[in-house]
Length: 61
Image (cartoon, rainbow, N blue to C red; front, side, top):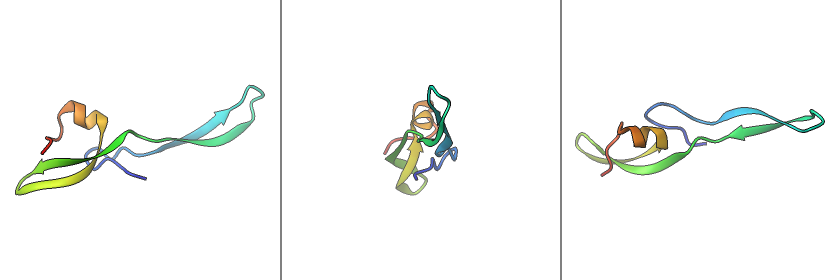
């Protein structure tokens, strides 16, 4: 599973709960995009969550 290389955000785990209260496992995946980012000395492809992209924590190349 991809994880944000800026903030470390990844998948979260929990349960689906039916009307009769039976539980089954489920996963919430973070919205992680593979983007080309400007870094000192050039560019690099990184996995970055959309929250970090929108906050301007990285700069697109």
